[in-house]
Every structure is written in structure tokens, then in C-alpha cells.
Length: 314
Image: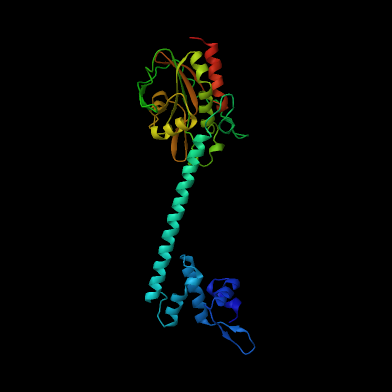
């Protein structure tokens, strides 16, 4: 058969077969007119080379397996040299995996270092990378899911905070407490749930936190005795965010979303997780004094809370 026929029968390309020939792995019979004549044995050899190559054995190192076939063995790996070829390929892959793992670890370290280094904000210099949001994000609508909250008693929940304390939401301290609830914060080394930007109100947790950071002193001066962020993420994850963003306040962890169940807060599903919808509570004397919902745009929300506090002095 011609080279094209042999290539089709073996599931290879003509170019690949010619390469195998150039290496002396495939040796078709030469006819009197100079044409190559490929037989069933050649087709088998070509298939064997492709199979071994898919396993990660370079074409150039398949010779021991082909010699095993030439010796009359029914399988290309029936010979000791073939087994040694397998082991060599395994050793090579192990070495490459080790090198790639080391490179990956180095990249993760660099990413972590850069993410933390670039979170430092010189005085008077805006933090564009964190406060900017993509254009065209869907705007969340007010579905009335928080209309029942003002005047409700805050449930007695004790939540772990990133500063090591345990905070009781019904008695956080005298005066007003601002608690902004958000779905989840992303990290440079973690992917956000698929389709995150298409969910109204989902995107923007990091810019929102940066806004409360940048306005923190003003919020306190306007009557917010305490400011907390709150999400369903665990404290260890939240501490990385507090450290990276240099937040001057603690984040509270409510992994079971108990606050949502107690106050019937709106939630949504994404990436297989149940998450808080973005909203902010102003608490005072164990009651919900005011609620901001929906929150948009999140990067401007801290300023909105500040305006409300100034307009409603305690």
C-alpha cells in the first residue's frame, strides 16, 4: 500500500510516517520503480509508535519496543528492554513534575508577594487596581427582601472575628455598629465562581472593603462606633484579605449563614455555595436601625453610609 493508505490505516499523518522513516523506525519495501510499499507490519509499527508517544515516550525512544516486535514477541513490551523504556519514561516524567511543581510554587510565592506589596497605598494616592470595577455590570434591583429589617431585634449570635475576638452581634458595644455583608472576596490565587460578573450585585467585594478602609476614620467620626465586614468565608481566608488590603477593622465569619436564617436575609447560590447578598446593617441598642439594600456600586458604598451617618446623628 502507498504511504497515504498506511497513514490512514494507522491513524497517523503522512508527515508523521515520513518522520518515523527518517529515524529508521519504519522501513517499507522499495519497489523496482522506487516507490515505497507498506505492509501490515508497517501499519502495526506506526500504530505502536503513536500509542507509545501518547503515553509520553518520545518517538526517538521507541526503538526497544519495536525491536521487541521484530523479535517475534506478540506485544511490544514483552521484552526487558521495553520495561526499562517504561521506567525511563516514568523517571523522566517524575523529574519534570518535580521541576514544574517547584516552578508553580515559586509563581504562587511571587503572586502572593506582589498582591500584598501592591496593596500598600501611599498617602493621597488612589488604589485604582482595587477600587475600579468593570463597565457594564448588571445593577441589582430592590426586590423588597430587606423591607422587614428596620426595627428588628438582632439575634444573639457569636461570630469569630479576624482579630481573634468573638463578637456578639446583639451587643457589640455602645453606640452604632456598621456591618457590611458581602458574598465573598476573591484572591489573586483563587478563581471566582463561573459567571460571577453576570450576577447582579455579586462583583465588587474587594472595592467595597477598600472603600470602608479608606473612609474608616470618617465613619468613626460620624458616629460608627465599630465597623465590621461579614461573609460566609472562614476566618483563615478572611485574615489573608484583611492583611493584604490593610483593613483597619475586623471581618466576621458566618460560614453557616446563621444571620441570614435568623433575620431572613436575602441570599443566592453561586459555584455550589450559598452566599449573602450584598447589604449593610446599621445596628444600635440591639436593633436594626437602618439597612442599605441593594448596594450599588459597591466601590462607592462606604461614602453612601458616611452620608447617612452624617445626616442622622445619634
